[in-house]
Length: 162
Image (tube, rainbow, N blue to C red; front, side, top):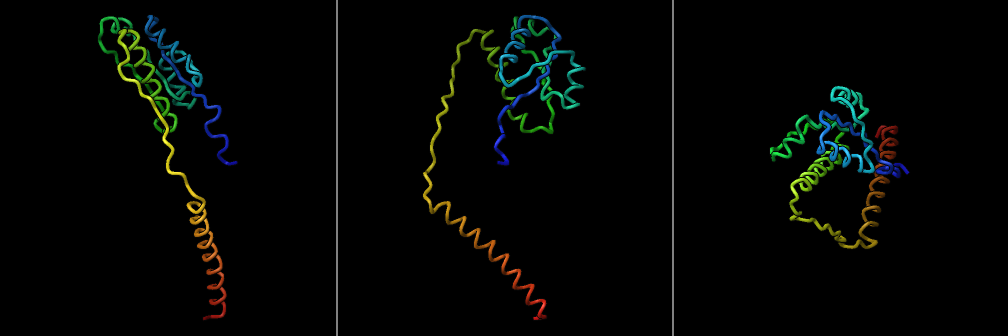
């Protein structure tokens, strides 16, 4: 009951500061908007950073001026990404997701084929028997009972000044 809603209806508010209106910036913006758990807000860098400081954004991506030109020339562009360092849970999700969006955008622009593909396969660990989870539970109950009733005996002995 306590943790039943964890992970459900997760939405992240992403701020995008567009300093350029080129095709690359528009493509990256569309890619960010296509992620279902992202709510993307666009605005000026200063306003988006203020929203991040107030806790209204989870992440701010700045698409700098000259980004399309540097992409066409093959020069790497620095993309500033600002995040709240205190929100570790969101950062573990958002930073790799944004990095993957930029990697995919670069792959599509350079028209290089994808060389590696990760095929994740789940492996079931050793199956537990009933004794594997019953025995630790019984031992824990015995220790709790010993602690509870052992303390009561000490209290009665102390009252009798023994």
